[in-house]
Image 1 (cartoon, rainbow over the protein chains, first blue to last red):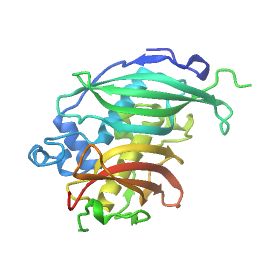
Image 2: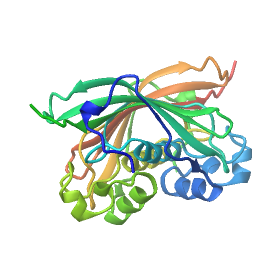
Image 3: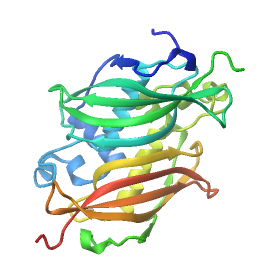
Length: 151
Length: 151
């Protein structure tokens, strides 16, 4: 298990390769779609064929959730990775049944929190790739990291 | 069932009240946490007590997924609501077991797509409230809407 990181352990330009990858099944796409994004192209192959996506495709929010799991696996923050907002997120390619997703994360910003004195805010960009090395999602997301030595 | 909307049907300043609401259970929080955000405060009440959240709290990505379902229920786009990116998203209060979430959506921008000639891009802000009328999530998200009369 990787070391649990404090704010002081991060630096701008630091990169985290995916600690694992995630294979996405038709079953998972449909189950998530039924629960959270019940639109035909997330539920049914035939309905997907006649849609914008020309086939069954994962909800972008399923892709985002899978990316969160990969982020949590790839960066171990002391006390947990607590989200502090999304600056931007783009879905750049559909995620299809059978795709395997991995992430590359880079630290692009760091600052002390003004409202939470014992925390810093780490800004990261994430690129999520499929098995063909196509980017399926990119995002800029902030998380809190506790200070090792609060003043 | 509400009318299915084309790009031309939307206008800036238009508001959509939540077509329904979503009650969030401890079971749903834990199930989503196990699948997509396996951190103690999303999995277990006791572990949550000792954490940043001081109790079991929903993954922000579960809240985002629930908000997507409410958005799909509240705005019916012809051919489906196809995401065209998140401009910003903030989690402003924890979502707890038993909370009931509803949304208010406002159209804040509209433009024709340059890459997809038969579509326009509708930019919306969403405020998601809990049962105490506290905002738990706010976001600015774009979706595609087909032109009724492509030139």
